[in-house]
Image 1 (cartoon, rainbow, N blue to C red):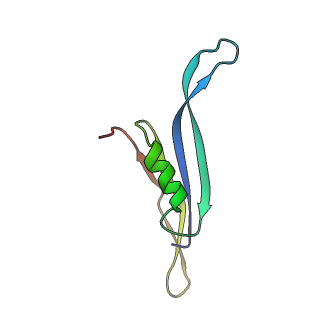
Image 2 (image 1 turned 90 degrees about the vertical axis):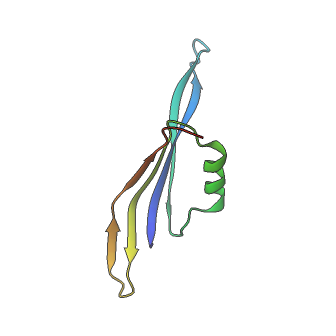
Length: 84
């Protein structure tokens, strides 16, 4: 793998500043990587915080073969539906 982008859509809770009420929301963290697997801090963050309803998304995956030819892999979306 030459490079890939990875996004982690997390389920979070936000607060309405006017009313003080909490409501469900989400945020997205993403980066471009040129190493595989994901760096240890990313792995640890996901292991410690992964919840139902979140998304792990690998996209723009590129691979070079021994002759230097560039290939593209399809996107991979992993939806977390349940947790054991």
